[in-house]
Length: 422
Image (tube, rainbow, N blue to C red; front, side, top):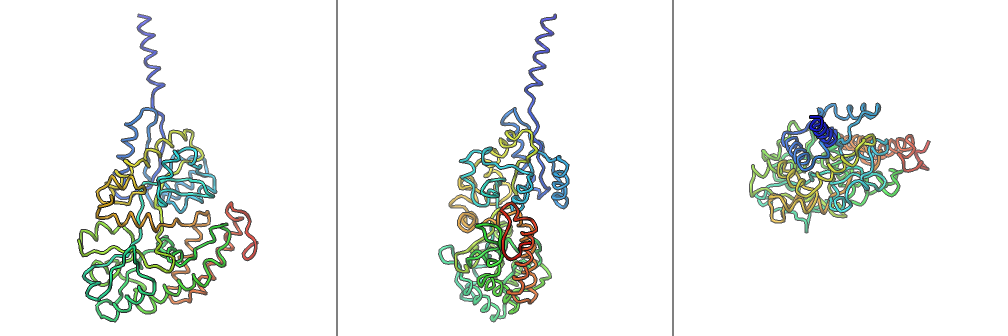
């Protein structure tokens, strides 16, 4: 009897020892398809091994950032957190997340496209499965009726050519405002959509060699030229300043819609073979688009970073990226993952979006200053839209950002010198 009890207790002790360790994950509450894809990925990970058990808590998107900030201040962050990729450098600079370079397999990181990772000072701090891309949508029949060619990756519209097409469409009398630029959007849309125009022209939001200076970059002649191009679109009524709705393209009131691949499914179903998906205009250095969406990072306070790393390695494996893409319709961030999907494989009907991500994507500046830089750029572009000259609007943005960077001692890149330093 005693021997049997000892064996039983030993078995119980063994079961306790073998219990999986919980890895807590926070994510923001998103659309049903993305949430379902996330739950399925977690179930597959938990079922594939017995050492770790991922437990996810979904937080309403409206309060997510505040929840992360509050938890970080009292050391209560979970092991893994979802992060909007442009904010990753700020979290890294603040010491809330850790580098993934030594935690995740190097070959897995190397397979990720630009939109699949977030960096700060040359190190990877976040990884993602999916991305969206910017595109110029039109209808083949409408272009043909105006005698306008379809832009291709081999021969995109130049900025001057595109302006001429818009003017032609305006004169035709069929389109009061030929181009829809998502005028009802606010916030990050401005930097996501229009800083690629700067990069296509050969300039940027900030000097990326040091991340210390905006002066001479955001307000140089090239940047002012792009800003004035943007302003003319509204002055010449090629774009509506304050649209009443966001249905101009689908209702045939605009010839073009410059927006994201989140419209791919809707527009494909509505227009079928008449839909044309084209690269954004080329301002001189080839078309550019913004890269990266929501990603995953491991917190500094995580007591089991190897378990968190195992989960992230699982998420960025090709089968998992493909599974997430199939469920959500979003763009996979590895070529191997794309190969495993119906839409994004080389002969897929949405392959063009993957090619845009591979050829044109530019990450937003990897600096903790980015949130301030983005909001400052938004104000400048809003002012230009309202009629302010681009040179004045961009000079004001530069002055504000130079002061911000100096006030924050360079955000970890060293103290700036010259204009704006305190």
